[in-house]
Length: 161
Image (cartoon, rainbow, N blue to C red; front, side, top):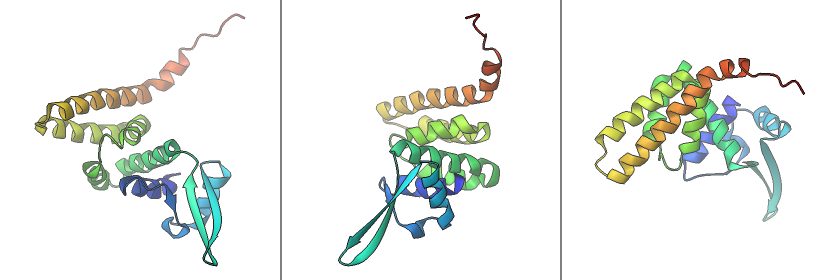
């Protein structure tokens, strides 16, 4: 899903693009896998006697999740690229991507939270700064829960029913 996520992220950062062409993915088998597991769909259509193939995610949330997995993978492979992507993001439009990213990797969460903290401290628009603080609280929660979710699962008590 990380390979699907790269294209998903580029689409979201490119004016919320939701329909892709096959050549926008690194390998054709990635699209086949995405369709097989139910993340994506392929639509073939004919326009002016030319066959066109459109590929899309079945819902924007799936595109955001795949994009977040790609982003979080960069925390282990290319932190500078991760920071570059985050620095170009519209935080309002990309809130779900940031939440999924922070929830999937502590290392990625540290990068994202550090960057947004820096930006929030420099922000002069009070409303925007307040939104960034709210976003930071959400991201810190996502990061905290992802770190300790295994411990929460271990604490589940079986009912005697």
